[in-house]
Image (tube, rainbow, N blue to C red; front, side, top):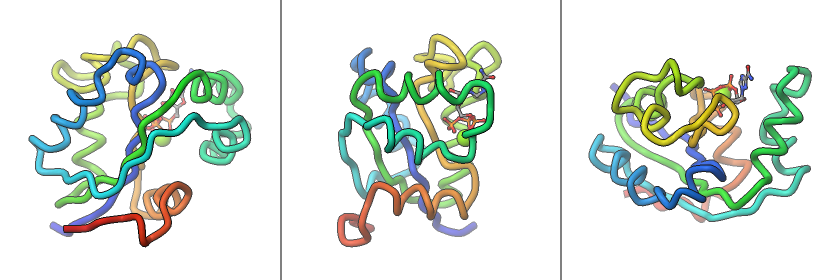
Length: 141
Ligand code: RTP
Ligand code: MG
C-alpha cells in the first residue's frame, strides 16, 4: 500500500466542543502523522472555493454558512492508505449512519454539523492540500 497525503478539517462544531486533541489522538493511534496544520476562520469566499464541487447542490449555502461559523483546524495527514484510513476514522457523512467509534458517531450532531472533513480521492487531496498549504510548510517525516 502506498504512503499518501490527505487534507483533514476539524469543523467549527468540533473546535467549539474542544475535541481537537481527541481527534488528533485518533489520527496518531491509527498511524497517520500530522505533517502540516493551521487554525483558520474561513471567509465566505474561501469556504465557497473549497466546496466549489458542491456549488449547485441544495445544501451548498448552509454548508458554507456552517463552515464560516467559527474557527476550523486544517491539517495534512500522511501515512499508508491515508485517504481511506481517514475516511474510515471519520465515519459516514450523516452521523446517524456512522459506525460506532467513528469521529462523526462520537462528536457530530447532524449531517450539517458533522465534525470533520476528509479528502475523498488522490486528485481531490492534492487540490485541497494546495488550497491551504504551500509545499514548504509541509513537514514530511
Ligand atoms: P466532507 O466533504 O465534508 O468530508 O463530507 P463528505 O465527503 O462525507 O460529504 P460530501 O458529499 O462531500 O458533502 C460535503 C458536506 O456537505 C454537507 N452535506 N449535507 N443535507 C445534505 O444532504 C448534505 N449532504 C452533504 C455535509 O456537511 C458534508 O460533510
Ligand atoms: Mg466530501
